[in-house]
Structures are given as structure tokens and as C-alpha cells.
Length: 150
Length: 179
Image 1: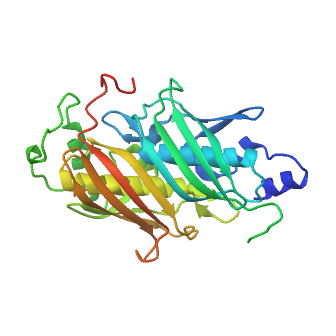
Image 2: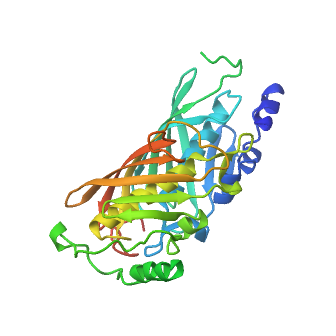
Image 3: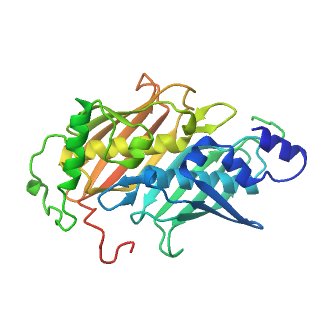
């Protein structure tokens, strides 16, 4: 993405909110980024279109999964030098509690930073950080700055 | 035909009392034809409606769903490739319908875990389909596998394996639950 390449060329990190806003699907979901230094929290603003179970009501499992995936990608963009958006290779999502119709927050940590592949874990919560609603672990393919594809 | 079926599905959701307790044994589950019918958008599920998710085919234990390509689903504006999250939502929903059609527990199942392998990016501009198969049901858990593709299931965009909790969604005031 142009936005990423320009930031890398200028030797800085891309503006992560601008990056998220440049991705149509993230705008559709309503994802915001709260960055305090190296600490990053993503916010999924609640809207009715995110509901997957109207009886409870509860957030759609796919929405929660997508939000965690975006959180992992944003964390990688902060910590890892990649010329393009990291691509998911595989992800596993544990659904721990039903997502209520309120704002949801998430944070990710990179557990292993390889040359081509990174392992990431992410957790989403609503009221209490200690009561996560879902957790993700996944592998993401990154594109190193030198363009080395080996 | 489509609107009639859509209304029927919403009504099926309404009939589920939040206080109704979950069946204790699989034999307690009343035999039920698949409540969802092919060929209409899942009007009772707001996020499915937002994705314009359509059921193409459903029979007990199997479902085929489609999300038509749309500009707001793009994950990389340079390439126009649909975001992985859309595939996640499509597979989750298709798996849920496959479980619902096998157990008759639509609306009262919850995803426990969902694992997805991404094989290749979706082709920009093309609709994405998902086939899901519920291949095992135990007392509390249903096991499902699924595949997302454009035209050929043998050439997958992504595959998934999922486990669902049966009779999980009992109502808004679940003691010890998220609230």
C-alpha cells in the first residue's frame, strides 16, 4: 500500500488510524485505533449491523474474529517492517463469552517475529480486560523491506 | 418466495423463549426441517444481512452460503481483495447453519472455536461461496468443517474446522455469563 511504502521511505511508522481508514472493510466494521506510544488498543464501535444472534443479542462470531485479525495486523504494522499488509496464513479463534452489543476492545502481542512469518496472539474484551470474550492466535506472512522473497 | 421464507425465519427466532431451557439429550431435540430456506438473505441476522449473505442450499448437516462481492468488503485497496474477516464471517455463518440444520437448534448454538487456513486470496470482483458440513454431533458439541471458494470446492480460498456448543444461548440474563 502506498501509505505504508511512503512511511517506510521516510523512515517512520505509518499512521495506523489512517491505515485502518484506508481499508474499506475496517471502515465498514467501525474500527478505531488508540495508540499511546508503543501500546496499542483497537476499538470496535458497536452498531446494529454487527449482531449475529438477535435473540441474545450477541455480536456475530465472524465480526469478533475479523476484529481480532485486524488487531493482529495493526500490531504487526507497528512493530514489524513490512512493505505490505501482513497476510494471514492461518488463524484460530477461541470464543470465550458472547459479545454483548457494546464497544469491544482488543490488544495483540507478537509471540515470534520470524523473517517471513510472525506468530501473533490477540484478545478482545468489553468491560473488563480480565474477562476476554475471544482470543486469537495466528500466523501472518510479512513482506520484509528489502523485498527478499526467499 | 424469498420474503415469505425470510419472515418465517424471523418468526422461528421469535418463538425461542429466552427462558426456555436447552434440551438435555439429543433425543429431546424435536425433529425439525431446516428452518432456513435456500435463496434468500438471512434477514433475521443483522450482520448476515449487512454482508448480503445468501443461503444457496441447505439440507440436514450441510449448507452452502454466498457473500456477493462488494466494495466495502475489500481488505487491501491496492489489490481489491476481499478482507480475511469476510471469509471468517461467511465460514462461521455457514458452519452455524449446517449445525442448526442438523440439530434443529437454530439460534441456540454458539461457536466455541474456529480455525481457518487461508490458501489463496479471493479474486477481486468475484462472489465468495462457502460449503459447511456438520459431520459429528455429541450431547453438547457439534463438529463442523467448511471450505470457502469461488466456483470449485477443490480450489479453496480457505478451509476451516469449527466446534459449536449446543443449546448455549439461553437468554440475556445468564448467571456467571458475560454480564
